[in-house]
Each structure stands twice: as C-alpha cells, then as structure tokens.
Image 1 (cartoon, rainbow, N blue to C red):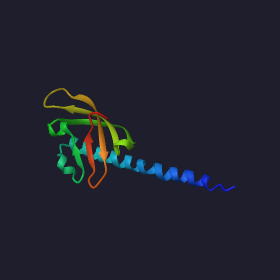
Image 2 (tube, rainbow, N blue to C red; image 1 turned 180 degrees about the vertical axis):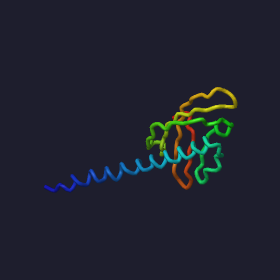
Image 3 (cartoon, rainbow, N blue to C red; image 1 turned 30 degrees about the vertical axis):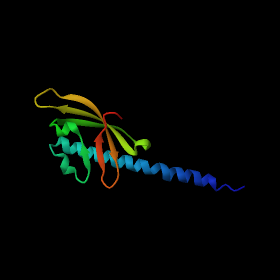
Image 4 (tube, helix red, strand yellow; image 1 turned 90 degrees about the horizontal axis):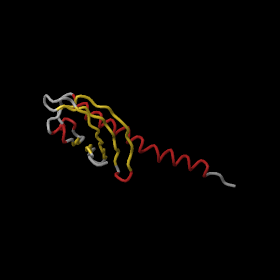
Length: 118
C-alpha cells in the first residue's frame, strides 16, 4: 500500500498554516510601531509607507500607554485583527482606558485601521 499521503498531509498543513502566522507577527509589528509613534508624540504620516487610520490620534488624544493583546488572522476579512488596550488622555482630563481592535491588511500598501465593530 502506498503511504505517501502520510507525509504529504502534514507538510501541506505546515506550509499552509505557517503563512498566516508570519502575517500575524508582521501585523503586530506594524500596530506596535504605530502606537509607539503615537505615544512618543509623532504624527500618523511619519509611518509611511504604512497607512495608520486612528480617529482618536487625529482628534488630538494623547496615548499614555498601551498593551498588546491577542492577534489572529481572520480569513473572511483577509486581515489580521489585533486587540489592544489603550490608555488615553484628552487635555487635562483624567486618563481613561479603552479597548481597540486594529485590522491590518496587506497589499501594495499596508493599512492599519481601528475597527469599531470587529
């Protein structure tokens, strides 16, 4: 009996399953770099060629700190979804904590977008 499939099936799984894992790590790196730039007082356009769309940053909110959470590839969205806990401050108001979900898509341009309804 030919048992070539015993080796082919695990090989296909390793090759197929590894690609999204690499994209997850890359996406987390893009989100972290953007949040580091925001926290240090930078501007979204300094992230080029990555496009980072965050209304809170554009509205002048200060990012006091952040904590990266789970990240996973979502096949139906063709995106990596990264959960983050943000500590924000507007003006002299007391800092507040918000949960955010960033969708990272890959194409000619990497786009990171705060997804309010993940």
